[in-house]
Image (cartoon, rainbow, N blue to C red):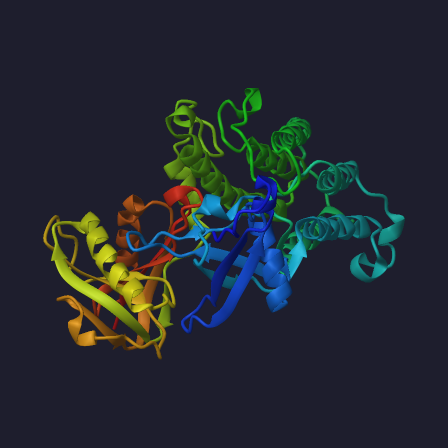
Length: 493
């Protein structure tokens, strides 16, 4: 950080500091976006965004900045906390930042209000039994007691969610991508339509067992109340709107799981399904469980990373008490679907191929290729990846190549003087690739490989070229390897 000459007071000296940062756009071309100047005693991320908004005309809500890894590591740092000082992320005067335009944004609160309004409105409208849906005489027939219970519980739940949105929830981020509005609304509104229609139909009759109705209604009511209690406790742990600070939740509600709000949400819908006996409600419950399991596992891993052994000693599970998280993870993975076939475009890379003692030793290759890349002034133009040339797993002497994508028109100085095994070349496009992705530690990749190759065999395909391991997300500011995203790409024929 550049410091102006000493003035008459220490406070004046601090006030006139200016940090100059070069900005390039994320992508294969790595377009140079110029230099942004951030002033302040200790410039923060939000001040960087404000300065970039003034110079580039991009709303601060659409901005995402990352600090690329240095010559010893590929791990990038995402400047995700607006209130944090740039220096805390290791950003120094003259550093280069990678900018990504997040696209059109919309407020979290706006999305929540819209997505919860739909199912509330659908069911209440169905409850009037409009003639064009149920027939001309339907409105004159009163709702059964079972239907009244179902409509009342559904209304109570989504009204509670709307009120929590305004008066309870504190969001760590102000906005989300605009596309999420449509995705979330389609999900909730569709289930509002398919659950509400049979529930309010003149021919609907609830369960014949009074015990089933009573048990389901009791489970729903208790779960809704405890879910609210968890939300209030989580609110109190977050000091203010926009803050990313949240200490370890404690108390009886968190004794068994890291995310009891999801646990009680699922249990509430189990109770609703029991006392209404609407088939679509069971589907809604299962879909919600799979999605919330995925969220819970990520948050659970975040707690483990942030608080280490102290959190591990609490012996909490992610969402289901007493059930190993691998079981819950398998349930969440089932929602993502099987591996898929895709194509991969050509890419220009600077790569280093060598035989190393084991898979972990590839770190030394990354350090070498990064050092040359930095010395050459080359910008990384996409996710880095490793090509494994061996057929199958090897305990030692692994033949691999680490590759950094660079711009198609990037100039490499003294290419003939590159170290042995290092080259700059164009990798051709791959027309058919079997792809499987994983979120989490690299130590958990073996089951993903097994699943992918079992799927390839089942589809009567065969590997045609060496497999690639693409590192889509490696962000040290997130929950360590719990947030890493890795894609396995196996070319097939």
